Every structure is written in structure tokens, then in C-alpha cells.
Image (spheres, rainbow, N blue to C red):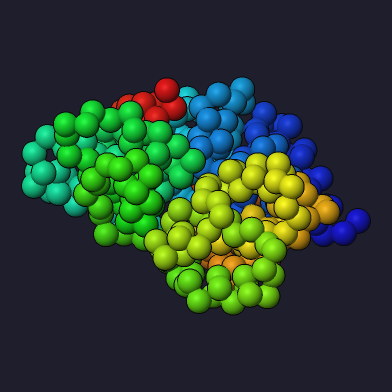
Length: 302
Ligand code: 13P
Ligand code: SF4
């Protein structure tokens, strides 16, 4: 039996033994998505974590995602196979930093992108993901200033789409923010019939070149439903495997060759096996932080 098959078998047995479910983000390695019970974007994974009927969740993604799962399902054991899998964007803001900024903007509503720590969520009124940020901002009272944390590119995009003036935190994702309009143009010149899909964490000038702007889950839906047969993809390269799987007859071209999130690639089959064997590392969130963060997350899910 090949190594991957062997590990897959071990994982299936351990999963059964512990009554565990494996959730994986689209940016994960193909072999991880193959053994997952559910693959999704940030919003779909948060919804799944909140409603799944299993005592143990193995979260194949990055720290803030597993932390959100624990906050939404505190009674469940949440395992993150690689504890150091972080998020550059989430690290751009701290709870103390947001608290200090709030004091400077009396009466503000804090909308926080899910790519953030529990401490930052605890300082927020409502959480959003890339798939519902516009809806969330549209639901806010118009007479109050809105502080949008921590992604300035997503905030800029949402401000334009909603016509609301948002006060933007100056953070970004180093993977998406590195994609340039010149790079997208070069791929578009090579494939003029391809539609350009980009993630809203990209820079405004890249977003301006897109035919479709959305979360990873939205891109999959768009590609599936579109009559077009080719697409240029401006997000982390892990989505390409999922797109090709969903649409085997269509063509997908990365908008640049280096759109890789190193933290998303830290999860391996060996680590998933080990985490189920040892039942660690387990994610814990201090109850005082979890309670407030849960409120902001639940408002989004409502
Ligand atoms: P999605 O919400 O589209 O899954 O994005 C998550 C993410 O980390 C983007 O970089
Ligand atoms: Fe964070 Fe960017 Fe990686 Fe997404 S791609 S997990 S925002 S560092």
C-alpha cells in the first residue's frame, strides 16, 4: 500500500474511534482535502463547525479558523494538526490595538473580518467573512461610524460596493496584496477569453480588472455556473485543485505563480494522523474572551 493510502486508512480508523469530523479549507493540500469530511471557505467552515454533530473537530486550516470553531462549539474538542499555522493578516491587529482605536472614534461600530484573533473579535460588534462582508455592512445603522478591521483591501472593496464610508485598519494579507495588476494583465494577454476571478483581499487596482470578485466558495460556484470555459484565478493556489475537480472540462490559470500561503500548507497527512492519535494540540480560548467573540460571530451567522 502506498504511504498516502496507508495514512488515509489510519486516519479513517482514528476518526471512527474518536467520533471525529475533518474540516478543511480550500487552500489546503489536495491529499488533505481528499480525506476531509467537508471542504469549504471560511463562512461555510464556521457554519459547519457550529452545527456539526461530532464531539471532535479536526480543523485543517489556520489558527483563527480553528479558534472560531472552538468559540462556536465550546463543548467540542477542536484539534489543529499544526499549532503554528497562523495567518499574516490576522496578526496585523491585536485586541489592545483595536480597543485603543475604538476610543478615538466615539460611537463606532467595529466590523471585524473573520481572519483575526479571538481577542480582536472580542472587541468587535460583528464579524464578517469575504462572502458576507457587504451584507454585514449594509445591515449596520447608517448614523454611526464604522471601523473595519484588519484588511484594508477588503474594507476598501466593501466601502465601494456599499457606498458607506468605512474607517479602515491598515492590514493586509501578504499573499493577496502581493498580486499586481501587471501580473494579472500578462496572464489576461495570454488568455484573452478567460474571465478574471479575484479574492477581495487583493489590491483595489487588481479588483478593478476582475470580472468577478468573491470568496473562494463563491469562485467555485461562479466557475461551475458560468458558460465560460476558462478563468484566471487571483487567490491562493490551493483553490485550483478544487476548481479543477468541480469543473474537469474547464481551464484555470493562476494570476501569478507565487500565490501560496505557507501557513495553509503546514498541514500534512502525518500531522492529521498524529493529532488524532494524541488528541492534541487542542484549541482553547479563555472564557472571558470566548464569550464576547462568540457574540460577534453569532451575529454574523444570524
Ligand atoms: P475565504 O473566506 O474566501 O475562504 O478566504 C479565507 C482566506 O484566508 C483568504 O485568504
Ligand atoms: Fe491569512 Fe492570507 Fe493565508 Fe488567507 S492567504 S490564511 S489571509 S495569510
